[in-house]
Length: 198
Image (tube, rainbow, N blue to C red; front, side):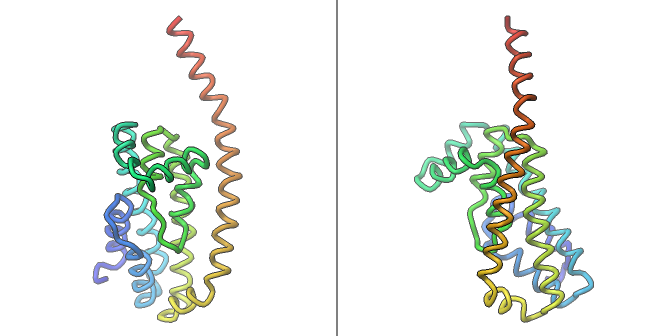
């Protein structure tokens, strides 16, 4: 708390790299924004940057380790289910826990994105979009409602959940459009590789 916004950078980086800090980043962001409203949006920005750094570290580790590393993290029932969801819904499984006010597992979807070599630009865009919405919304509410932010969130949980679901639906559409645009490029790469081998 005494570190202010840089403390959020550090904590959100740890949280996104896989160190379990359930709700810690949100709580610290609310606290910093309540005590120092002028720093609310700076704190949110630092939280976004830290989250991107931590997620990228995890993504790159998984990308380098590939399927072997992914298999080690998806060997149990829950891990297999999360991997299946990723294979079915793609980066939406990263976007949803990144934006959701309810704690959801994000580590395995990030591992899936890295190990299955999802385009890095698409991955960063999904994480950044979710975190910007989540953290800047929290900063705004904390700046406006102060110590009543948590009671406000508890009282208005249903509209918040509906907004999150609407954003996820929008993310599904946008990510499908991005994937469709990427398909011709992937097809060209495969054809070039085949030609080189022949």
